[in-house]
Amino acid sequence: MDKPLISRRLVDSDSSLAEFPSEAPKVGILGSGDFARSLATRLVGSGLSVVVGSRHPKRIVGLFPSAAKVTFQAEAVGSPEVIFVAVFREHYSSLCGLSDQLAGKILVDVSNPTEQEHLQHRESNAEYLASLFPTCTVVKAFNVISAWTLQAGPRDGNRQVPICSDQPEAKRTVSELAHAMGFTPVDVGSLASAQEIEAIPLRLLPGWKVPTILALGLFIFFYTYNFIRDVLQPYVQENKNEFYKLPLSVVNTTLPCVAYVLLSLVYLPGVLAATLQLWRGTKYHRFPDWLDHWLQHRKQIGLLSFFCAALHAVYSVCLPVRISYRYNLVNLAIKQVLTNKSHLWVEENVWRMEIYLSLGVLALGVLSLLAVTSLPSIANSLNWREFNFVQSTLGFVALVLSTLHTLTYGWTRAFEESSYKFYLPPTFTLTLLVPCVVILVKGLFLLPCLSHRLSKIRRGWEKDSAVKFTLPMDHALAQKTSHV
Image (cartoon, rainbow, N blue to C red; front, side):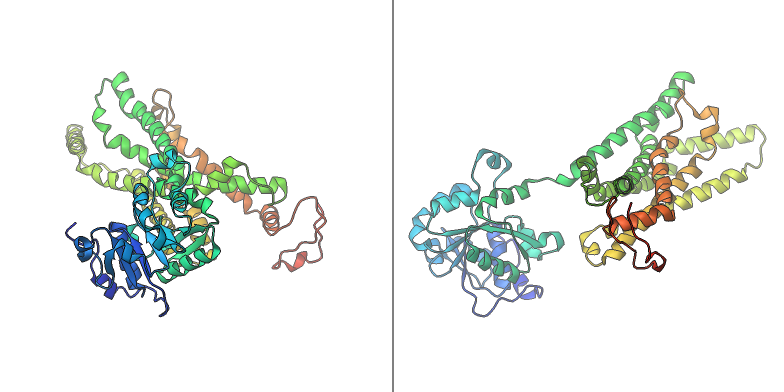
């Protein structure tokens, strides 16, 4: 590389970097790659004295901050007590010649294996490094932090740094370094946990796998269903070629179905959990594993619902731009002239379409608010009551608005015989099943007999127990004893 990964001006201009105590020891870095350069810049900006060791110091000196000293490896490991090993596993053996100089020092392993290496080796990179340098204390840390994060500074989810080692004092020292750099250290135990830490960067959106498969499954189902009704049926029974609808029109009909069902699936597990608590009469029994996993994936399902709804809005804007739409509009005008109709206006359809579009815009607006508040940077600025109000109350409002939007779209077509193509009901009737169940049960939970009992259960009351329990706001219940 002929340019440094980051500008030296970052060191002077980044005021967010934490300051380290004036008596901080020197920190060494073995390695000259992107991560080593970003690490050196972050350490220098945090007020630490940094020494970088390289096999070719003259070649790479211009890539590091001017405040960092770049020298040969043997000289770099002389004075620092903490040394970051920023080289790949296969290069660890090249450092064995420094064993005497490294004796008694803290080695911070920041490397990550590839997926193949992780499956191939029984021991982690940190454990392998510890076996090569038995006189050193090895700490696994900073491997989940990218070079970009070191440049830009810690942000929300990138702030945590898992740390593990067999020596508590070494972990404390590295934790202080992490704090000085603006990160939050997380102690995960002994060095045996290094393999688990090294597996973290290898995960590719683990929480999104099931929700994505669910969304794709719903899309395939509704797309096939709409294809049969809107394309195949006219072709078979009326000899009309409408396959041109496949790229845009059928997709646009499918997307709101997927978004609507996904949104209802966000709130269905909460309804099931509340029903289980009422039935069991306690909150201290574990939910079934499938329900527990479902509850944990609600955020991802909700974001996919918003994604499909946003795509539906964009696709809907594109509908009038199609050349097929213009042809149909011209054909309708010609047909109106031939039938000698000078004024075509159906008051009911006009009002229905106005209400339908307005409800759709409102639902998308509320969904946008839910999506924005699910971002860590926004969610962290809200207290629990505010976050619960947005995600729970406004989320239910979005579901109700979406239901009204769907009902005004369908209107009376569910009762018209012509709407049942190949004896298949209109698509919107299928999408209403789960949301209507959720709304109905949610409404039942608002009844005083159920809401009061559920509130008591969530505050610790249990069925079949002689425990006096009263809600603090209900003075009329102060004399009653719960003994069910």
